[in-house]
Image 1 (tube, protein in one colour):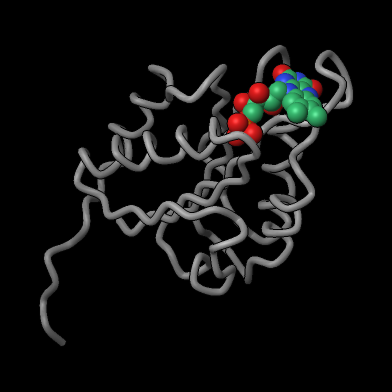
Image 2 (tube, helix red, strand yellow; image 1 turned 135 degrees about the horizontal axis):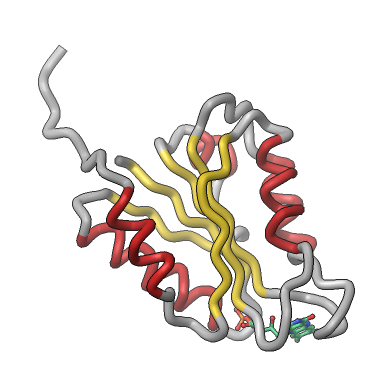
Length: 146
Ligand SMILES: Cc1cc2nc3c(=O)[nH]c(=O)nc-3n(C[C@H](O)[C@H](O)[C@H](O)COP(=O)(O)O)c2cc1C
């Protein structure tokens, strides 16, 4: 599958997590484009077979956690995602509250199907993500003409 991974990162942790996620998915035979919210074109991303959107966790550590403004704006800018498979992720230090379900809800409002929600304490994707990467079982098709 053609997978777009779009992230917002302030100090590099979420960028590293996104790159590591892309590497794991590529090892499973998928094609990944890993881009920051500033670089990514919402129209192009909307065309991917699978979309992952990630943010660092912003809040008061124990309460009021939310995705960053730029990542929420990026989700709003995406086109119609009816039936599209998506996942959300974040990096955090203490707790993420309702941040991931809220990101999922924003994608669902575009018609997307959210099939994964992942949180990493630091930049390394965990075993849950690895299992998920292995469970997406439609590698990039070797193009047939026409
Ligand atoms: C202003 C600010 C608010 C934060 N709020 C939270 C929070 O509510 N919960 C939490 O677990 N981590 C919080 N963090 C920690 C970051 O989410 C975490 O270090 C993240 O991995 C940073 O990602 P980045 O390196 O991609 O910017 C906060 C960090 C900052 C700078």
